[in-house]
Amino acid sequence: MKTINLCGCTRQDFERVMAEFGEKPFRARQLYKWVYKNRVFDFRTMSDLRKDLRQRLQEKYHIALPHIVARQKSADGTEKFLLEFEDKNVAEAVLIADDASGRLTLCLSSQSGCPLGCTFCATGYLGFKRNLTVGEIVGQPLVIRDLYGDEAFDNVVFMGMGEPLLNYDAVMTAIDIMTDSLGLMIGARKITISTAGVTPGIKKLAASGSKVNLALSLNAPDDVRRRTIMPIAGKYPLAGLLAAVRTWTEVRKRRVTFEYILFADFNDGEQDALTLAALVRGIPCKINLLAYNPIEGGVGRRPTDEEVDRFAQRLYPRAPAVTVRKSRGRDIDAACGQLAGKKGYL
View 1 (tube, rainbow, N blue to C red):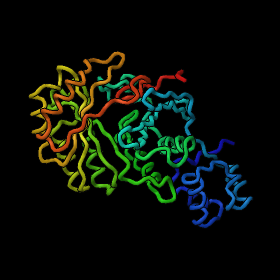
View 2: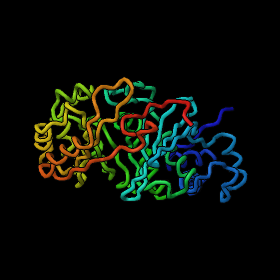
View 3: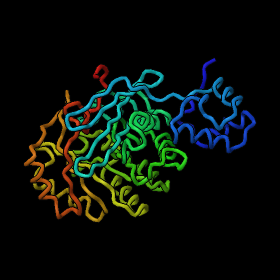
């Protein structure tokens, strides 16, 4: 008989499992802690559960994490992991070291592939396979901690494959497990959801009470150009999108991060900086500038470091906080927009 994977189950799910066996809720808490906090995935070694209960669990259930089928390490220390799931679909996770702060950030995927088709993103050219399950999402930090220990990373960002707000329920349930005191114990303020601009999802996130951070891939200061590189902008224009972002900042009492990828001679002119500053005026925010990372089949030219710095100087102090973000892991296709789930790397 095929057993059921418990990775991704919530506390309530574990309570239902234990109720099947006539067990009290405290047994569910024990099992939950073994899986997510202690990272023990073999029922036989869960020492505070009775032997007969462990046997019954093993007969009906199992705990399976994503399988690391390949990994690469960049010259700058960035590490990329190709993860395969039980149905052989794949996604990638990236572990990024910040030289300045010493912090480690884990970049997670929420979908296998992506349906949005942004012209600057390799995942978009890959196409959409499917949404990841709760277990496949929460399994990514579990795998990395199982490899490197509890201190494997400091922050989590949903900036890998896929649009997290198009897999909202699974992402938010995974975050609940990640932030649970009996789960992965990751502070909500150390988790960021990055969206290409799904307006209803931002509104839903604002109303949810979740304390996670929000980042928006803006990438152009007007709807016309934004639509040429991000088809989703045709469905969710800037006016409604920024109104939803403003609501999120008012509810959360935190600033949003605007991610702005610079393409030479497309969105990096002096007037573009002025238009961008006017666009975000009054919204508590910081703006991260990043030079386009060229991809196979992509369009556009990567600006020089001098061109990026010139844009930043035009933007600040007209915008409240401006940061030039250096790409990490470009030599292993692990930088922003380069994740394509290629099999075969070592």
